[in-house]
Image 1 (cartoon, rainbow, N blue to C red):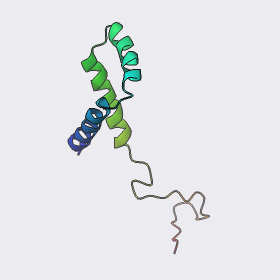
Image 2 (cartoon, rainbow, N blue to C red):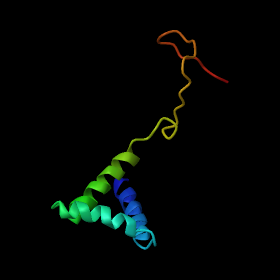
Image 3 (tube, rainbow, N blue to C red):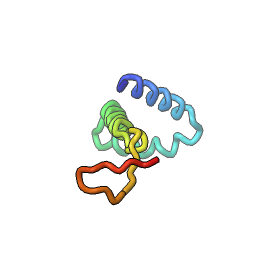
Length: 81
């Protein structure tokens, strides 16, 4: 599953590279490269951050709802229609 997500993300990266407004971000990355950080390390860090962000499902994605205080006693479950 992680491999599929990474491949999808990298395809999006390829599309963004073709984007006409990519130039404004190039300067930001150039500053990192000037600080002796390789482009490969930058790309790996960004991929790692993206994968961590998308691998943590929120409650709604996991099929869980947060109903707050339902008034049920501790250890009990309140069923909703």
